[in-house]
Image (cartoon, one colour):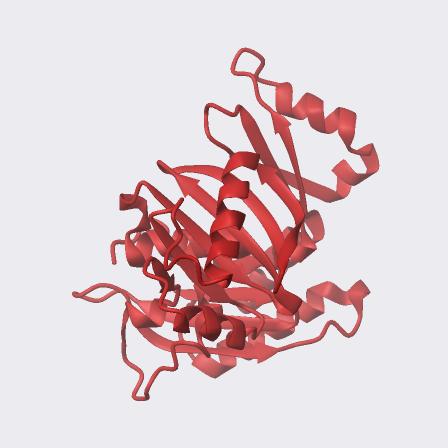
Length: 297
């Protein structure tokens, strides 16, 4: 299985095969590819896939891909079990009809108590491009994931996060603009972005439960001020970066936060690679988690 995740112009990749002891990593790395002509996005993605396939040289690869969330659209609405077409009605009222023709919308439920739904808009040209390129390369696309949501799948599959009552996926971003995905009792509670500053910070955007977000931000501020040694409102926190913000991750990891773990599959999975693994340099592989959905590790 070849897993690829996009972060800006960087594409992280990891290939694994099943073995008697579980998934075995055979290749991993990253490449950088700029979009030279937005009107020829098909050729761009073909170049990405072809370049990575040439690096790993495997027969009949099966791929998964995790999209950069910056290329997608996010919104929320309420669902009503008694009105099956509620979400479609909401989208028709709030989104331009021309947009509906070029974007596919997918829905991710928040907790049942909230009755909220997270709507994720994926440009149709991306799906069409992948289908076209898979045919050219004679390769199968097994699934498409999204950034931190793919990392959340990885936390469950690699580190058994789903056995916890609550956990937080923390994606450290450029210029201290981070993303957080909070799960409680197996349900999505909140998804938000926060800009860290020495004196506190500010909320960039948020979806879901505001109270849980306030508690998480308060924990973060307490940790930055060295007033506590753990996140008090969460059982476990999994931290990673996909865009090279390694120094920030190293800084938080060096603080000795009791319930903080690096989210790196290479620290868990067996591998056939004859070299030492840098647990920080390979953190971008966290977003290859959608490749492991339904796989026992």
